[in-house]
Amino acid sequence: MKFENNYAFAKAQDEKDPLSSFRNRFYIPVDSDNNELIYLCGNSLGCQPKSVASYIEQELNDWADLGVEGHFDAENPWMPYHEKLAKPMADIVGAKPSEVVIMNTLTTNLHLMMVSFYNPTPDRHKIIIESDAFPSDKYAVESQIRQRGYDPSDSLLLWQPRAGEELCRLEDLEALVNEHGDSVALLLIGNTNYYSGQFYPVKEITALGHKNGSKVGFDLAHGVGNIMPDLHDNGPDFAVWCTYKYLNSGPGSLGGCFVHERHHKDKNIQRFTGWWGQNKDTRFNMRKGFDPIPTAEGWQLSNPPILSMAAVRASLDIFAEAGMKNIRAKSEKLTGYLEFLINDLNNDDIKIITPSDPKQRGCQLSIQVKNADRSLHDKLTKAGVISDWREPDVIRVAPAPLYNSYEDVFEMVERLKKILKYN
Ligand SMILES: *Cc1c(COP(=O)(O)O)cnc(C)c1O
Image 1 (cartoon, rainbow, N blue to C red):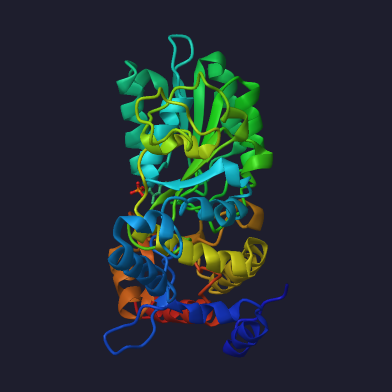
Image 2 (spheres, rainbow, N blue to C red):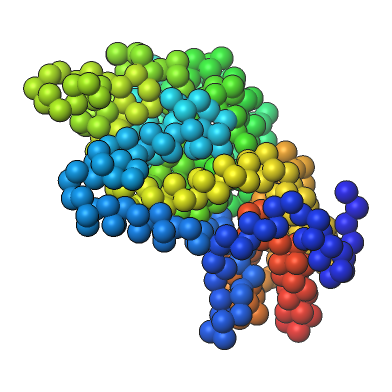
Protein backbone atom coordinates (compact mmCIF):
# COMPACT_ATOMS: atom_id res chain seq x y z
CA MET A 1 0.00 0.00 0.00
CA LYS A 2 1.24 3.46 -0.90
CA PHE A 3 1.02 5.95 1.95
CA GLU A 4 0.94 9.72 1.76
CA ASN A 5 2.11 12.18 4.34
CA ASN A 6 -0.86 14.51 4.54
CA TYR A 7 -3.99 14.97 6.58
CA ALA A 8 -6.39 14.37 3.67
CA PHE A 9 -4.86 10.94 3.08
CA ALA A 10 -5.23 9.98 6.76
CA LYS A 11 -8.82 11.14 6.77
CA ALA A 12 -9.62 9.22 3.59
CA GLN A 13 -8.20 6.04 5.15
CA ASP A 14 -10.48 6.46 8.16
CA GLU A 15 -13.46 6.88 5.88
CA LYS A 16 -12.59 3.66 4.06
CA ASP A 17 -11.78 1.73 7.22
CA PRO A 18 -14.36 -1.04 7.81
CA LEU A 19 -13.61 -0.96 11.55
CA SER A 20 -13.78 2.81 11.99
CA SER A 21 -17.15 2.74 13.76
CA PHE A 22 -15.68 0.67 16.60
CA ARG A 23 -13.98 3.79 17.94
CA ASN A 24 -17.43 4.96 19.10
CA ARG A 25 -17.74 1.89 21.28
CA PHE A 26 -14.96 3.19 23.53
CA TYR A 27 -14.43 6.13 25.83
CA ILE A 28 -11.35 7.92 24.53
CA PRO A 29 -9.58 9.67 27.46
CA VAL A 30 -9.80 13.48 27.40
CA ASP A 31 -7.75 16.45 28.61
CA SER A 32 -8.94 18.98 31.20
CA ASP A 33 -10.83 20.88 28.49
CA ASN A 34 -12.62 17.69 27.51
CA ASN A 35 -10.75 17.33 24.20
CA GLU A 36 -10.00 13.77 23.15
CA LEU A 37 -6.38 12.81 23.66
CA ILE A 38 -4.35 10.87 21.14
CA TYR A 39 -4.31 7.71 23.17
CA LEU A 40 -1.56 5.37 21.96
CA CYS A 41 -1.09 3.48 25.19
CA GLY A 42 -3.34 0.46 24.69
CA ASN A 43 -0.23 -1.67 25.23
CA SER A 44 -0.42 -0.61 28.87
CA LEU A 45 -4.11 -0.06 29.59
CA GLY A 46 -6.76 -0.29 26.89
CA CYS A 47 -9.63 2.20 26.69
CA GLN A 48 -12.94 1.43 28.38
CA PRO A 49 -15.66 -0.06 26.19
CA LYS A 50 -18.84 1.94 26.74
CA SER A 51 -20.71 -1.35 27.17
CA VAL A 52 -18.74 -2.34 30.27
CA ALA A 53 -20.98 -0.42 32.67
CA SER A 54 -24.16 -2.20 31.56
CA TYR A 55 -22.49 -5.63 31.67
CA ILE A 56 -21.38 -4.98 35.25
CA GLU A 57 -24.69 -3.42 36.19
CA GLN A 58 -26.49 -6.58 35.11
CA GLU A 59 -24.49 -8.59 37.62
CA LEU A 60 -24.91 -5.97 40.36
CA ASN A 61 -28.66 -6.01 39.84
CA ASP A 62 -28.85 -9.80 39.83
CA TRP A 63 -26.76 -9.90 42.98
CA ALA A 64 -29.06 -7.35 44.64
CA ASP A 65 -32.24 -9.14 43.56
CA LEU A 66 -31.21 -12.77 43.79
CA GLY A 67 -28.35 -13.03 46.27
CA VAL A 68 -26.84 -16.49 46.24
CA GLU A 69 -29.45 -17.78 43.80
CA GLY A 70 -27.70 -15.70 41.15
CA HIS A 71 -25.27 -18.58 40.74
CA PHE A 72 -28.07 -20.39 38.92
CA ASP A 73 -30.83 -17.88 38.27
CA ALA A 74 -29.00 -14.75 37.14
CA GLU A 75 -29.57 -13.61 33.58
CA ASN A 76 -26.06 -14.96 33.01
CA PRO A 77 -25.74 -17.60 35.75
CA TRP A 78 -22.50 -17.12 37.69
CA MET A 79 -21.77 -20.79 38.11
CA PRO A 80 -20.88 -21.34 34.42
CA TYR A 81 -20.14 -17.65 33.71
CA HIS A 82 -16.48 -18.26 32.79
CA GLU A 83 -17.47 -21.00 30.35
CA LYS A 84 -19.13 -18.42 28.13
CA LEU A 85 -15.83 -16.60 27.77
CA ALA A 86 -13.84 -19.59 26.54
CA LYS A 87 -15.00 -19.52 22.91
CA PRO A 88 -14.47 -15.80 22.19
CA MET A 89 -11.17 -15.91 24.06
CA ALA A 90 -10.04 -19.02 22.18
CA ASP A 91 -10.86 -17.38 18.85
CA ILE A 92 -8.52 -14.50 19.68
CA VAL A 93 -5.52 -16.70 20.48
CA GLY A 94 -6.24 -19.46 17.96
CA ALA A 95 -7.11 -22.23 20.40
CA LYS A 96 -9.92 -24.66 21.11
CA PRO A 97 -12.34 -23.42 23.78
CA SER A 98 -11.33 -26.35 25.99
CA GLU A 99 -7.72 -25.11 25.93
CA VAL A 100 -8.48 -21.65 27.31
CA VAL A 101 -9.63 -20.34 30.67
CA ILE A 102 -9.98 -16.85 32.11
CA MET A 103 -8.80 -16.88 35.71
CA ASN A 104 -6.62 -15.11 38.28
CA THR A 105 -4.10 -12.57 36.99
CA LEU A 106 -1.17 -12.92 34.66
CA THR A 107 1.72 -13.45 37.07
CA THR A 108 -0.34 -15.86 39.16
CA ASN A 109 -1.12 -17.88 36.04
CA LEU A 110 2.53 -17.88 35.06
CA HIS A 111 3.37 -19.42 38.44
CA LEU A 112 0.62 -22.02 38.12
CA MET A 113 1.85 -22.97 34.67
CA MET A 114 5.43 -23.32 35.87
CA VAL A 115 4.23 -25.61 38.67
CA SER A 116 2.90 -27.87 35.93
CA PHE A 117 5.46 -27.41 33.17
CA TYR A 118 8.70 -26.71 34.96
CA ASN A 119 9.78 -29.92 36.63
CA PRO A 120 13.50 -29.50 37.18
CA THR A 121 15.83 -32.44 37.77
CA PRO A 122 19.58 -32.29 38.42
CA ASP A 123 20.09 -33.06 34.71
CA ARG A 124 17.40 -30.80 33.28
CA HIS A 125 16.75 -27.66 35.30
CA LYS A 126 17.37 -24.62 33.09
CA ILE A 127 14.89 -22.03 31.89
CA ILE A 128 15.52 -19.82 28.88
CA ILE A 129 13.85 -16.39 28.79
CA GLU A 130 14.46 -13.41 26.54
CA SER A 131 16.95 -11.00 28.08
CA ASP A 132 14.62 -8.03 28.09
CA ALA A 133 11.82 -9.96 29.75
CA PHE A 134 9.20 -7.98 31.64
CA PRO A 135 10.47 -7.69 35.24
CA SER A 136 7.53 -9.57 36.76
CA ASP A 137 8.21 -12.57 34.53
CA LYS A 138 11.85 -12.58 35.52
CA TYR A 139 10.99 -12.42 39.23
CA ALA A 140 8.48 -15.24 38.79
CA VAL A 141 10.99 -17.44 36.98
CA GLU A 142 13.77 -16.78 39.48
CA SER A 143 11.51 -17.57 42.42
CA GLN A 144 10.33 -20.81 40.79
CA ILE A 145 13.93 -21.87 40.27
CA ARG A 146 14.79 -21.14 43.91
CA GLN A 147 11.61 -22.75 45.19
CA ARG A 148 12.66 -26.01 43.51
CA GLY A 149 16.06 -25.87 45.16
CA TYR A 150 18.08 -24.56 42.20
CA ASP A 151 20.01 -21.35 41.72
CA PRO A 152 19.09 -18.80 39.03
CA SER A 153 22.79 -18.18 38.40
CA ASP A 154 23.06 -21.79 37.11
CA SER A 155 19.54 -22.35 35.92
CA LEU A 156 18.46 -19.14 34.20
CA LEU A 157 19.67 -18.53 30.64
CA LEU A 158 19.07 -15.33 28.68
CA TRP A 159 18.33 -15.10 24.97
CA GLN A 160 20.02 -11.81 24.16
CA PRO A 161 20.36 -9.46 21.24
CA ARG A 162 23.91 -9.31 19.89
CA ALA A 163 26.14 -6.42 20.95
CA GLY A 164 25.01 -3.27 19.17
CA GLU A 165 21.65 -4.80 18.21
CA GLU A 166 18.22 -4.33 19.74
CA LEU A 167 16.36 -7.42 18.53
CA CYS A 168 16.77 -11.09 19.42
CA ARG A 169 17.68 -13.41 16.56
CA LEU A 170 16.05 -16.82 16.29
CA GLU A 171 19.35 -18.41 15.30
CA ASP A 172 20.85 -17.25 18.60
CA LEU A 173 18.04 -18.96 20.53
CA GLU A 174 18.75 -22.08 18.52
CA ALA A 175 22.45 -21.85 19.37
CA LEU A 176 21.61 -21.40 23.07
CA VAL A 177 19.30 -24.42 23.06
CA ASN A 178 21.92 -26.50 21.27
CA GLU A 179 24.67 -25.41 23.62
CA HIS A 180 22.70 -26.34 26.75
CA GLY A 181 20.79 -29.24 25.18
CA ASP A 182 19.34 -31.72 27.66
CA SER A 183 19.76 -29.34 30.59
CA VAL A 184 17.04 -27.01 29.28
CA ALA A 185 13.70 -27.74 30.96
CA LEU A 186 11.64 -24.80 29.73
CA LEU A 187 11.63 -22.02 27.13
CA LEU A 188 9.50 -19.14 28.42
CA ILE A 189 9.24 -16.28 25.98
CA GLY A 190 7.41 -12.96 26.35
CA ASN A 191 5.65 -12.57 23.03
CA THR A 192 5.35 -9.78 21.81
CA ASN A 193 8.34 -8.24 23.60
CA TYR A 194 7.06 -5.34 25.66
CA TYR A 195 10.14 -3.20 25.02
CA SER A 196 11.07 -3.71 21.39
CA GLY A 197 7.63 -4.70 20.08
CA GLN A 198 9.24 -7.75 18.43
CA PHE A 199 6.93 -10.71 17.85
CA TYR A 200 8.80 -14.00 17.96
CA PRO A 201 7.72 -16.92 15.76
CA VAL A 202 5.60 -19.19 17.97
CA LYS A 203 5.77 -22.16 15.62
CA GLU A 204 9.54 -22.18 15.19
CA ILE A 205 10.30 -21.57 18.85
CA THR A 206 7.89 -24.27 19.93
CA ALA A 207 9.38 -26.76 17.47
CA LEU A 208 12.88 -25.86 18.61
CA GLY A 209 12.04 -26.41 22.28
CA HIS A 210 10.11 -29.60 21.74
CA LYS A 211 12.83 -31.11 19.54
CA ASN A 212 15.16 -30.55 22.45
CA GLY A 213 12.77 -32.25 24.89
CA SER A 214 12.01 -28.94 26.63
CA LYS A 215 8.61 -27.52 27.49
CA VAL A 216 7.61 -24.26 25.81
CA GLY A 217 5.42 -21.48 27.18
CA PHE A 218 4.61 -17.93 26.08
CA ASP A 219 3.63 -14.81 27.95
CA LEU A 220 1.22 -13.10 25.58
CA ALA A 221 0.63 -9.97 27.69
CA HIS A 222 1.56 -7.79 24.71
CA GLY A 223 0.42 -10.30 22.13
CA VAL A 224 -3.17 -11.13 22.97
CA GLY A 225 -5.68 -9.11 20.94
CA ASN A 226 -2.73 -7.80 18.97
CA ILE A 227 -1.02 -10.58 17.02
CA MET A 228 -2.38 -14.03 16.12
CA PRO A 229 -0.34 -16.72 17.88
CA ASP A 230 -2.40 -19.73 16.63
CA LEU A 231 -1.71 -21.53 19.87
CA HIS A 232 -3.39 -24.83 19.12
CA ASP A 233 -1.71 -25.47 15.78
CA ASN A 234 1.65 -24.06 16.79
CA GLY A 235 1.51 -26.27 19.85
CA PRO A 236 3.25 -24.64 22.83
CA ASP A 237 2.53 -26.35 26.14
CA PHE A 238 1.03 -23.26 27.74
CA ALA A 239 0.51 -19.54 27.40
CA VAL A 240 -0.62 -16.83 29.81
CA TRP A 241 -1.82 -13.26 29.34
CA CYS A 242 -3.64 -10.36 30.91
CA THR A 243 -6.82 -8.76 29.57
CA TYR A 244 -6.34 -5.10 30.46
CA LYS A 245 -3.88 -4.18 27.68
CA TYR A 246 -5.16 -4.77 24.14
CA LEU A 247 -8.23 -6.57 25.48
CA ASN A 248 -9.53 -3.44 27.26
CA SER A 249 -11.10 -5.10 30.29
CA GLY A 250 -10.03 -2.61 32.95
CA PRO A 251 -7.13 -1.97 35.34
CA GLY A 252 -5.83 -5.13 37.01
CA SER A 253 -8.51 -7.26 35.41
CA LEU A 254 -8.35 -11.03 35.07
CA GLY A 255 -5.73 -13.03 33.22
CA GLY A 256 -6.06 -15.78 30.67
CA CYS A 257 -4.39 -19.13 30.33
CA PHE A 258 -3.92 -21.68 27.56
CA VAL A 259 -3.02 -25.31 28.22
CA HIS A 260 -2.57 -27.41 25.10
CA GLU A 261 -5.08 -30.26 24.92
CA ARG A 262 -2.33 -32.89 24.85
CA HIS A 263 -1.94 -32.25 28.61
CA HIS A 264 -5.58 -32.21 29.62
CA LYS A 265 -5.97 -35.86 30.56
CA ASP A 266 -2.52 -36.38 32.01
CA LYS A 267 -3.23 -37.40 35.61
CA ASN A 268 0.44 -37.30 36.53
CA ILE A 269 0.90 -33.66 35.80
CA GLN A 270 1.88 -31.60 38.85
CA ARG A 271 -0.38 -28.70 39.68
CA PHE A 272 -1.64 -26.50 42.45
CA THR A 273 -5.28 -27.28 42.94
CA GLY A 274 -8.50 -25.76 44.22
CA TRP A 275 -12.17 -26.65 44.17
CA TRP A 276 -12.91 -24.82 40.91
CA GLY A 277 -10.60 -27.20 39.05
CA GLN A 278 -12.49 -30.20 40.37
CA ASN A 279 -14.77 -32.27 38.15
CA LYS A 280 -18.06 -30.39 38.12
CA ASP A 281 -20.15 -33.45 39.00
CA THR A 282 -18.35 -33.92 42.29
CA ARG A 283 -17.24 -30.36 43.05
CA PHE A 284 -19.64 -29.98 45.94
CA ASN A 285 -18.96 -33.43 47.27
CA MET A 286 -15.99 -32.09 49.14
CA ARG A 287 -14.72 -35.28 50.64
CA LYS A 288 -13.77 -36.94 47.37
CA GLY A 289 -10.20 -36.92 46.12
CA PHE A 290 -9.22 -34.34 43.52
CA ASP A 291 -10.39 -35.24 40.05
CA PRO A 292 -9.41 -32.43 37.67
CA ILE A 293 -11.69 -31.20 34.89
CA PRO A 294 -9.98 -32.56 31.74
CA THR A 295 -9.68 -29.11 30.10
CA ALA A 296 -7.80 -25.89 30.88
CA GLU A 297 -10.51 -25.35 33.50
CA GLY A 298 -8.81 -28.02 35.57
CA TRP A 299 -6.18 -25.43 36.51
CA GLN A 300 -8.71 -23.08 38.13
CA LEU A 301 -8.45 -22.57 41.87
CA SER A 302 -11.32 -20.36 42.97
CA ASN A 303 -14.75 -19.35 41.87
CA PRO A 304 -14.08 -16.27 39.76
CA PRO A 305 -14.84 -12.57 40.40
CA ILE A 306 -17.97 -12.06 38.30
CA LEU A 307 -17.85 -8.25 38.29
CA SER A 308 -14.41 -8.26 36.72
CA MET A 309 -15.40 -11.05 34.39
CA ALA A 310 -18.37 -9.01 33.20
CA ALA A 311 -15.91 -6.39 31.94
CA VAL A 312 -13.89 -9.08 30.17
CA ARG A 313 -17.08 -10.36 28.61
CA ALA A 314 -18.04 -6.90 27.33
CA SER A 315 -14.66 -6.60 25.69
CA LEU A 316 -14.60 -10.09 24.18
CA ASP A 317 -18.02 -9.49 22.65
CA ILE A 318 -16.55 -6.51 20.79
CA PHE A 319 -13.62 -8.59 19.57
CA ALA A 320 -15.98 -11.32 18.39
CA GLU A 321 -18.02 -8.78 16.48
CA ALA A 322 -15.01 -7.12 14.84
CA GLY A 323 -13.15 -10.40 14.20
CA MET A 324 -9.50 -10.89 15.03
CA LYS A 325 -8.50 -11.26 11.36
CA ASN A 326 -10.02 -7.88 10.52
CA ILE A 327 -8.46 -6.29 13.56
CA ARG A 328 -5.06 -7.64 12.61
CA ALA A 329 -5.44 -6.53 8.98
CA LYS A 330 -6.19 -2.96 10.06
CA SER A 331 -3.40 -3.05 12.61
CA GLU A 332 -0.80 -3.91 9.97
CA LYS A 333 -1.88 -0.94 7.88
CA LEU A 334 -2.22 1.48 10.77
CA THR A 335 1.19 0.68 12.22
CA GLY A 336 2.63 0.65 8.70
CA TYR A 337 1.33 4.19 8.32
CA LEU A 338 2.92 5.26 11.59
CA GLU A 339 6.22 3.72 10.47
CA PHE A 340 6.00 5.51 7.12
CA LEU A 341 5.39 8.89 8.79
CA ILE A 342 8.22 8.44 11.30
CA ASN A 343 10.63 7.44 8.54
CA ASP A 344 9.43 10.40 6.50
CA LEU A 345 10.73 12.73 9.23
CA ASN A 346 14.14 11.93 7.78
CA ASN A 347 15.67 12.58 11.15
CA ASP A 348 18.96 10.76 11.77
CA ASP A 349 18.40 10.92 15.52
CA ILE A 350 15.27 8.80 15.26
CA LYS A 351 15.35 5.06 14.88
CA ILE A 352 12.53 2.54 15.05
CA ILE A 353 13.77 -0.47 17.01
CA THR A 354 10.75 -2.62 16.23
CA PRO A 355 11.17 -4.91 13.20
CA SER A 356 9.96 -3.42 9.92
CA ASP A 357 8.51 -6.77 8.83
CA PRO A 358 4.81 -6.71 9.85
CA LYS A 359 4.99 -10.45 10.59
CA GLN A 360 7.55 -9.77 13.28
CA ARG A 361 5.65 -7.14 15.17
CA GLY A 362 2.24 -6.22 16.53
CA CYS A 363 0.82 -2.74 16.59
CA GLN A 364 3.50 -1.18 18.80
CA LEU A 365 6.49 0.74 17.50
CA SER A 366 9.39 1.49 19.82
CA ILE A 367 11.01 4.70 18.70
CA GLN A 368 14.50 5.49 19.87
CA VAL A 369 15.39 9.19 19.92
CA LYS A 370 19.09 9.88 20.21
CA ASN A 371 20.06 12.21 23.08
CA ALA A 372 16.46 12.50 24.21
CA ASP A 373 15.40 12.20 27.81
CA ARG A 374 12.12 11.89 29.62
CA SER A 375 11.29 15.53 28.91
CA LEU A 376 10.46 14.52 25.33
CA HIS A 377 7.81 12.18 26.63
CA ASP A 378 6.52 14.88 28.98
CA LYS A 379 6.23 17.33 26.07
CA LEU A 380 4.32 14.78 24.05
CA THR A 381 1.96 14.27 26.98
CA LYS A 382 1.50 18.02 27.25
CA ALA A 383 0.73 18.12 23.55
CA GLY A 384 -2.08 15.59 24.15
CA VAL A 385 -0.29 12.41 23.03
CA ILE A 386 -0.42 9.55 25.53
CA SER A 387 2.52 7.24 24.89
CA ASP A 388 4.94 5.59 27.23
CA TRP A 389 8.58 6.05 27.94
CA ARG A 390 11.34 3.55 28.55
CA GLU A 391 14.70 4.71 29.87
CA PRO A 392 17.05 5.73 28.49
CA ASP A 393 15.60 6.97 25.19
CA VAL A 394 12.64 5.01 23.83
CA ILE A 395 9.06 6.14 23.22
CA ARG A 396 6.60 3.31 22.78
CA VAL A 397 3.45 4.02 20.81
CA ALA A 398 0.80 1.44 20.08
CA PRO A 399 -2.04 2.39 17.73
CA ALA A 400 -4.83 0.01 18.79
CA PRO A 401 -6.85 -0.92 15.70
CA LEU A 402 -10.22 -1.02 17.49
CA TYR A 403 -10.20 2.60 18.59
CA ASN A 404 -7.25 4.41 17.04
CA SER A 405 -7.55 6.13 13.68
CA TYR A 406 -5.22 7.07 10.85
CA GLU A 407 -5.88 10.62 11.93
CA ASP A 408 -4.56 9.83 15.44
CA VAL A 409 -1.39 8.48 13.92
CA PHE A 410 -0.96 11.43 11.58
CA GLU A 411 -1.56 13.95 14.39
CA MET A 412 0.84 12.17 16.71
CA VAL A 413 3.68 12.49 14.24
CA GLU A 414 2.78 16.14 13.50
CA ARG A 415 3.02 16.95 17.20
CA LEU A 416 6.26 15.03 17.57
CA LYS A 417 7.63 16.97 14.61
CA LYS A 418 6.80 20.29 16.27
CA ILE A 419 8.36 19.26 19.55
CA LEU A 420 11.58 18.10 17.90
CA LYS A 421 11.88 21.29 15.89
CA TYR A 422 11.67 23.51 18.94
CA ASN A 423 13.72 21.20 21.14
C1 LIG B 1 1.80 -6.27 31.70
C2 LIG B 1 2.70 -7.43 31.94
C3 LIG B 1 2.71 -8.13 33.16
C4 LIG B 1 1.84 -7.70 34.32
O1 LIG B 1 1.54 -8.77 35.15
P1 LIG B 1 0.27 -8.75 36.13
O2 LIG B 1 0.40 -10.04 36.85
O3 LIG B 1 -0.97 -8.63 35.30
O4 LIG B 1 0.43 -7.55 37.03
C5 LIG B 1 3.53 -9.23 33.27
N1 LIG B 1 4.32 -9.64 32.24
C6 LIG B 1 4.34 -8.99 31.06
C7 LIG B 1 5.21 -9.47 29.95
C8 LIG B 1 3.55 -7.86 30.88
O5 LIG B 1 3.58 -7.21 29.72
